[in-house]
View 1 (cartoon, rainbow, N blue to C red):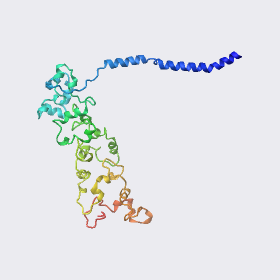
View 2: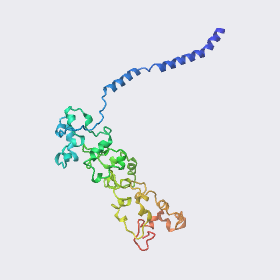
View 3: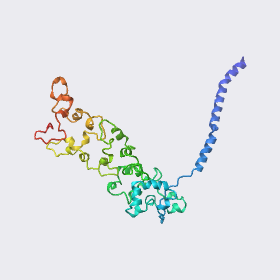
Amino acid sequence: MKKRDAVVALLPLLAVALLVGWACSRLSSPPPGSEALHAQEASTASTAAPRPQWTGSPPHAKYVGSESCLTCHEESTQRFHKTKMGRIMSVNPRTPQEQRGCESCHGPGGPHVETEGGAKETMMTFKKGAEPVEAQNATCVNGCHEKGEHTFWKGSTHEMRGVACVTCHKVMESVSDRYNLAKPTAIEVCSQCHQTRRAQLQRSSHMPLREGKISCSDCHNPHGTVTQAMLREDSVNENCFKCHAEKRGPFLWEHAPVTESCSNCHEPHGSTNARLLKVRVPRLCQQCHIETRHPTNPYDPTTGSRFVINRGCVNCHQKIHGSNHPSGFAFVN
């Protein structure tokens, strides 16, 4: 009986000893198969050649001509010649830079040809993430795309945020009808980043971008401007007046929020309200017109008031963008 009690007393100690031993074995020995996994990773790391870091063209590197590129890159060169830039460089080069063809963008190919395909670090490539964005963009801007539409690229929103030219443009292959875009349309290109604007364009009231009547670049210059939101004109209103000339004026009676900015009332990219309004009438008007002339809630049909007609201020104040009538101070005519 005493021996039995002694064995029972030792059981907890035995369980603790077994648990400690198991934990030590787990910590000291790797799990099954881990040796093979680590060996495979080490082998892959040792056999995979690291990508050479771009160093730029060495001094006195020679230009060998685009014909030398055809030896290895015939397929990509043929695709390039079908693009707008390819036709300019191959058919009608206008500057010495364009006459160099492939080497005008990739740099002198002498070291690459002399080493029979080596010295890749001396050649500029335009794959995403392959080279520094600043170096890629400098190749496009310096000497070629630095005037006109691209005058304000340096310091622009896209340039400051590290957007590469190849993010929006595809030079070696013809994908779009115009501008060598990376996608078939400008909306698809811009939507890569501007997802909120893409969603707004799907709303019931929207600018006719989806129908192809206008493009993002009709209002914005993606390469930079001196105005807010990269607008092409000096202000929001001037941008809108290019199409909505009847709202320009001048008016004898001007509506202050209209004069200030069209975006006070309208959401230009899309809205769930009619006429791209940010808020439905009358709530839109009551954001400013509170406790003035009309009661705060003049839309009770039991009052018989004329202000309840269709629950809309513009039923009476039809010339809300401005009036030229002598008695149109309230924009009713």
